[in-house]
Length: 140
View 1 (cartoon, rainbow, N blue to C red):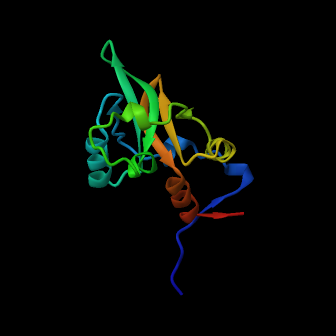
View 2 (view 1 turned 60 degrees about the vertical axis):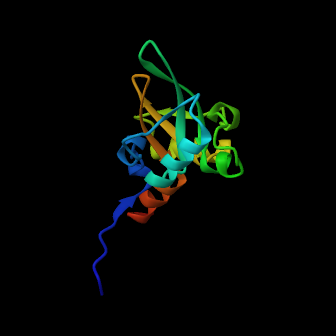
């Protein structure tokens, strides 16, 4: 029988932080980007969502999130991301626990979280990242 290399997650050690398993580096798009370009980036890099930013004083400020689902039915590649993005984006701090992050996603009915540290986007966590976390740990 093959030896399994699983870590154990229990309520006593559920202090895994979102920064421990989020996806990095983050690719963002600007609020005025066109859907065709964003679709190409998502396909090329295998992303299902991108944070949408507006650069002000050389600092990218998050304005929303665009998912592949948002752009799937858009046939005009020149449509602005601003027209199809979701403005209400959930953001968590890098030191937020996996449990709290999962609760936020579940209660909000979303599949992606943007992770920030010092008001800078440092990662993204998706439902797939949580599946990966569970797949590499045993739950007790």
